[in-house]
Image (cartoon, rainbow, N blue to C red; front, top):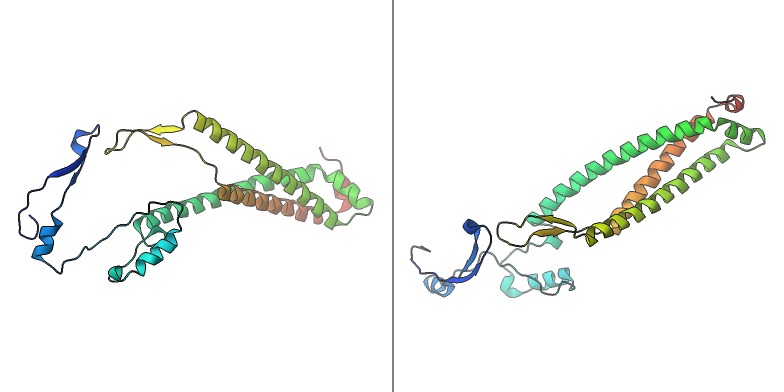
Length: 233
């Protein structure tokens, strides 16, 4: 029953799946008959798919919005940020930010502990540098430079390991998940390292390393030369 009128539908297409109760089917709708009953009726929603994935979608969206036939409709697109998908992605982005903050805090705590211990164990080295005329700012520079070099080396090693593990996992077929209710083929999940995520991880690592080095250098600035030259056991 549509608009108090009965219609006989015929199946246009059937997609067979493993779940019999959830087979997807397509019904041919008699839209012409509905238009005859209500000539002023119009579609409440129009969905458009762009066939060329390389095209500039914002340009196509602006062109669709400028069409007089669509003037009475409000445009919703992922590029405009006003779809349900955007809200779902926003939840994942917020979770990612929380995880990133926790990882950065943990990294800063671990690096600070290691940097303070290393600076304390190398007290005679710092005391000797000060005794032969170096300024304390030179100690800060040396510690910061060492931390920066180690952080960059760790980023390079981590990037190489990420690329190698992703390549091995993809060559092995990735992760195969069971098919959804309306499909028969399993879902294959591959790995693709993202440059933006790698650069973000590098920035966090470098900043945490520099912050930890500055904390240890600040502790050295408060220590007299005689205390630094004292043998550490």
